[in-house]
Length: 265
Image 1 (cartoon, rainbow, N blue to C red):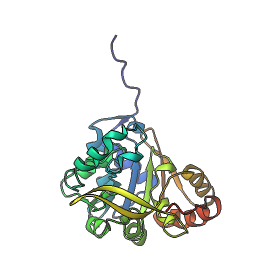
Image 2 (cartoon, rainbow, N blue to C red; image 1 turned 30 degrees about the horizontal axis):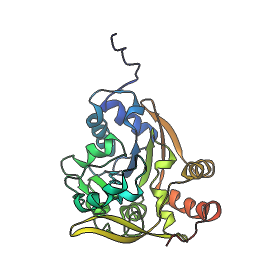
Image 3 (tube, rainbow, N blue to C red; image 1 turned 90 degrees about the horizontal axis):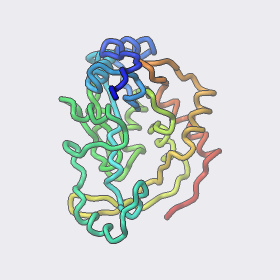
């Protein structure tokens, strides 16, 4: 049976750039993007064309930032989707390759982040589980100094993005993907947790602030109700555009009130 033709819309490098500008993306700005490529429609040129469209919209002085997380570099005892047999845990810990920002692929954050990560000139931050990649004029300023014991807090690119007046674009992605909300977890009473991961000298355990996206969809709903969020479309994808600083400040108040958490350690 023949494959049915695509239903569209047809998305190109040019339409991505034009629709981003119509949405309000500005030449020279710093943009943190959470995305779903398939939500756009039929993209001529795939993720490469989309990244090119972003770079066109941001211009030569702009900066594109994406999450390049590697959650699989974690303790196999905590894996759930799928779990692995207990007798595998120690061999996995002993043989898991440590994080290398140049070669470790990102997982579960979409196709566009991996495309940006491997783009000529892209820089990637140092945290072995919650790295970011950036491309453009302010890439090094955003990426440098990501402490390896601070996933998404004050010594992460999120705090740099906030200070640099960056904005967030959710492109076909929900508020459950909004990493900026996590920065708020570091600014309110939050539990600590022991985090296992592969390190340069073997398996290591560090103490981190416990982070979770639980109820971020509700948080996002209230944020959009109470704060200015630019809404639009790029291709067939819903798009939401707002400042990192607004999201963090709102999340600080909301999480403290609606999602207080107890100590884990």
